Image 1 (cartoon, rainbow, N blue to C red):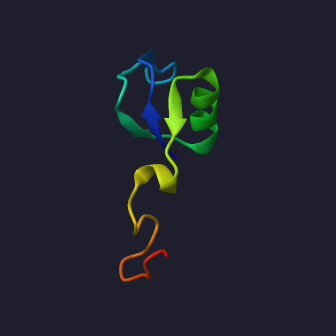
Image 2: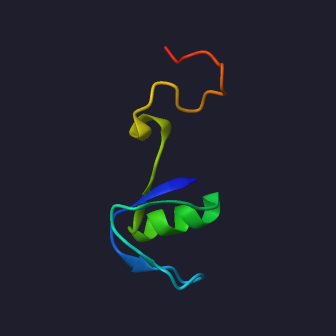
Amino acid sequence: MQVNVLKRYVDRYTKEIKEAGATYEYPQQRARELENAGYVEVITEEKQGGENVGCKKGGKKKK
């Protein structure tokens, strides 16, 4: 799942500093842990703002 960092934190597994405003890809369970702790928000299709988000190449546009 893609997440947007709301608050700077140090990832407890990788020990990397994640800066506010950055976007990262996490497994669903880890993304939910971080979301529940208030560090990130999960990016959904509506939040990405793209009309073709989630479509395969050559796929139909969403209405």
